[in-house]
Length: 247
Ligand code: OAD
Image (cartoon, rainbow, N blue to C red; front, side, top):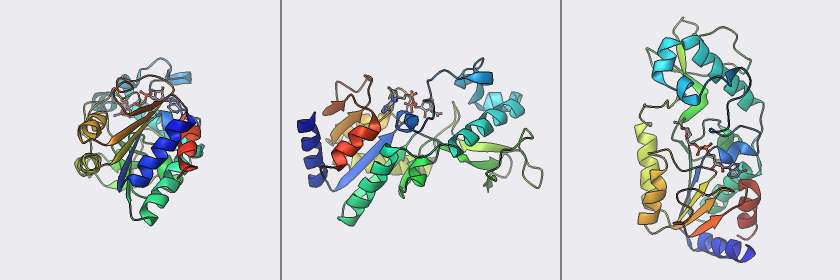
């Protein structure tokens, strides 16, 4: 494994453009359940697909916003983990040495930004941002837990989380920036994602086609484990630290 980490660090040093794509596994060590962990507690009787859709919101705006608010409170109570901090340090290392580093995430927990990452492309939006259902205006909710559902703005407009629901398109400018960065990447890391949800998982295909050095960090196999240059069956924090210590 050390030899592999040495090789990967060499690829980082040779690279001009580096892209990291994260999924829920990158936040697992912060105590945030991965997307496919069974929902727990009062939400155990639902599947995410029954809550994270425009139809569910239209039918039960109170239930859906209560679930997202409970997730928002959960995220606010968590801290970025070693993996988040190393990815922010990698961005700093890259940018200060004339390289470019793009932090692309499927996660909606805002932990990359809290760890210090600056150039974060949130493919699936953010739990920490809410928006008016009619106006589309972004609203920053106060940190304190909301208790009235559905949540409304001061003007009475119903609010929804600024996240991508099943069946909704990804934010266009964000996704095209991620596509462009991936197509030009010399090194592409995919960290903590089951790589089964498109179009986000399609970025890995694009990195492979573009000839980037591809590195997967995931304790479990994914559909890409046999296709990437380096499949590291390790947890994200320890593995990313191992690479960074060699830069
Ligand atoms: P998943 O829950 O599908 O996958 C999480 C992955 O993280 C799994 O492959 C785990 O093996 C891996 N994992 C767990 N702990 C880890 C650790 N400590 N270090 C590294 N990897 C670890 O979550 P995602 O792949 O992010 O989309 O799911 C992708 C999308 O599916 C989500 O963004 C969501 C969902 O539909 C939307 O909400 C639009």
